[in-house]
Image 1: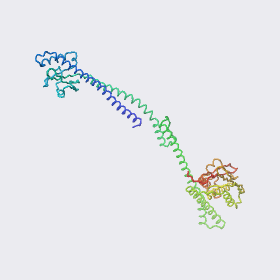
Image 2: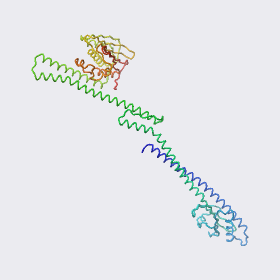
Image 3: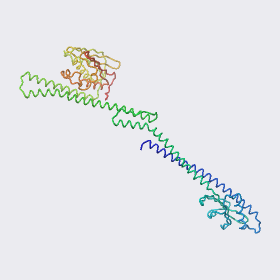
Image 4: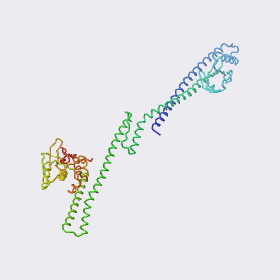
Length: 473
């Protein structure tokens, strides 16, 4: 059942119960009030009849000294026909419960007489021939006789009014329920509209339409729920796109890895087969062995770089404070024998908090890439500058440069701007990917500024703080 139908149904149930109970108590209260008024009136009239009977009995000639039955019957007949008795029925009985006078239609039931006591008045409500009566009873002591006077007053109108009241209230209740059902159908539809919009948006999300959002149409809790849902949908869509990018990157990584394996393995297998199947002269044999050795070293380098990336992603660092001069001196020593390029080192004194071996790896890879991008005798600068936020390392070359559209991709594993140049120098496109992972551990990132034909500048800043914690992102 729809939520709007549940709201409508429970509203009608509550209204029906409320109207039913309130109508019952209201009509019943009016009925009891009217009936109590009729009972009091009947009791008052019976008291008047008692006084009238006693007065009439005292006016009877005391010929016999005792009130005769004929006199009682005569007095009863006069009381019945008097103005006071025109709307009531009377019955007078003697000490033995023998009826001395009874109005036509008076009920023959004697149960009330058994409960009558001296100086007391009692009553009961009795149904009789589709009518309702208030029957009263009392004792009259007159002229040495104890008589029982009973009256019956018709109160059928009170019961008819109650019946009519219930009938009218049922019609009013039914009308109110019909009107309420119409109004509540619109109200429940309006109240549940945000839920329907959320349901539609959720269904679209389940069908793969991750851009679907629910429209906010109120400022209440449902409106806040809509906002929270849209925020959740935004986060979900962003995460899905990230997962898709990661899957795409992983597929590209696997494809690139397979391609990078295929090229050296093809050369190794081809030259190995040549050495195995033919007898070659010394020069060709050396050339074949050299190809096998060169491609094997390239595979070795690639495997070590991959291993370094994997280990770096799963490791924490142990930072320590040290002077920056040792990094620059290390780079001088490493490339002192390289005659292909001109290395220039310039640094400002300072200290950093980092893991020495990892930062050296970053600098080595950046300088190695600069060497590969430079022509014979090209200039490579290794610079260091103290900043307010930390210490900046910069490796700058004046080589081929990197196109703008390629700059966002060169940190991906196996991505190479110039594949032929990189392979000729045992490159596999893993150096910058390793640098990126190491810098993440140091809460830093690689900044690349490059123009084709003018060279490339790669820099990073190590934050100036006592301790660096690794962050997984």
